Amino acid sequence: MFKLDVLKKMTTEEKYKYMLILLEGQLSSEKDSLANLCNASAIINAAMDRLNWAGFYINRDGVLILGPFQGLPACNRIEFGKGVCGTAAAEKKVQRIENVHDFPGHIACDSASNSEIVVPIIVDDRVCAVLDIDSPELNRFTELEEKYLVKFVEKLIKYITWNEI
Ligand code: SME
Image 1 (cartoon, helix red, strand yellow):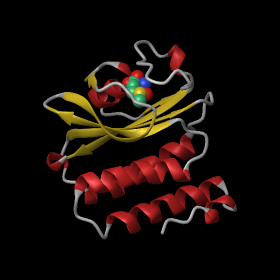
Image 2 (image 1 turned 60 degrees about the horizontal axis):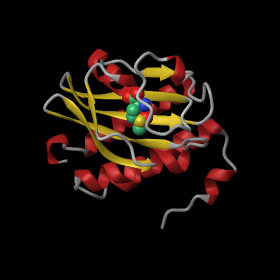
Image 3 (image 1 turned 135 degrees about the vertical axis):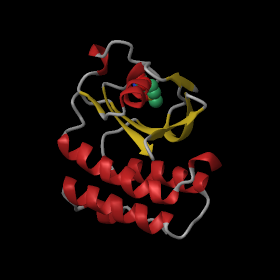
């Protein structure tokens, strides 16, 4: 059973370290990539405070298609180069956006979102997916969040076969 009580007493960085432990624990016992990706989005949502959306967009034939997520229903398809997600995919670079309303071409799925971080998931130089996280708080994502979300993705890719999803 998943116990959240332990998170309540932790500092922010301790929570993020624990998030990586939870990911390894949950995914190492399962081979199904879809199940693993579903749990990965749930682990982020449980371990990180003040979020309104956390999930994945999967690269299918050059288009980012909505994958497992936690939050309100979201747009189904994002082209490379469009929005924050498509920019992360096209540039193969983390996008950490203090205020999404200042980002040209930002795609608003949930009007509650004010800041966003998108981490491209790259295997053998191919962008397989992006991890997208939104917050209602301005400037929610700092270097600390970026550091641990990049580590999260590095661990995650060991347990996902992207063409199975
Ligand atoms: N804001 C994203 C779209 C996806 S939603 O946030 C879930 C973007 O601009 O790419």
